[in-house]
Length: 84
Image (cartoon, rainbow, N blue to C red; front, side, top):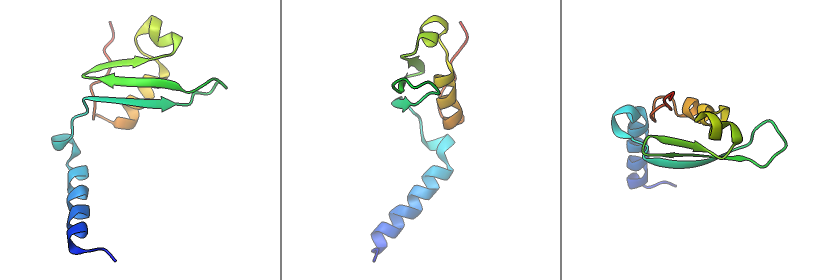
């Protein structure tokens, strides 16, 4: 059985999530993404507006399918990578 304090916290969490654009700013994160190849998962990182992926394509282009997928998942919650 949940107590009233926990019920209040759950309600507050829902409000925070609904108001995410005004309340939440991602500063950094690290994600493991399994690509289509049978290789080890790629590590995608975001740090204060800068993206990085450990794949070869990102090393040469500064963007890749892995980093762009995470941008889509986070839908306007992080800065998009800029074309150089």
